[in-house]
Length: 104
View (spheres, rainbow, N blue to C red):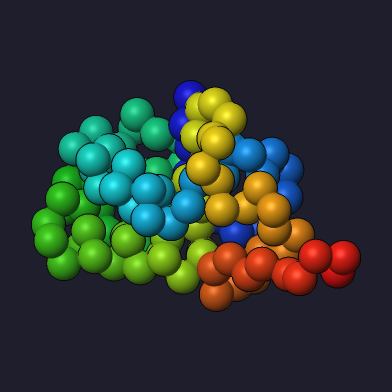
């Protein structure tokens, strides 16, 4: 099962399962029709101060997407991803992803 996790919980997940913010935002936007289908999504919605009933409104969808874009929350795919931007990354920052030079 896919899940959404806060930045503080990200270290317990395999980098190959962390989706890029672009794809994550798309998956989360689709899941807002039924937030309970993705573990952690109701918590993200509530952290934004949004009720589960109102999460599909455009303004609220943007606020939820901003949390993903800023790297406050991450989408963890059910399986391994071949396109994950973190496959070669050694650092996750609060402002999103940061690739470090080789040998760092």
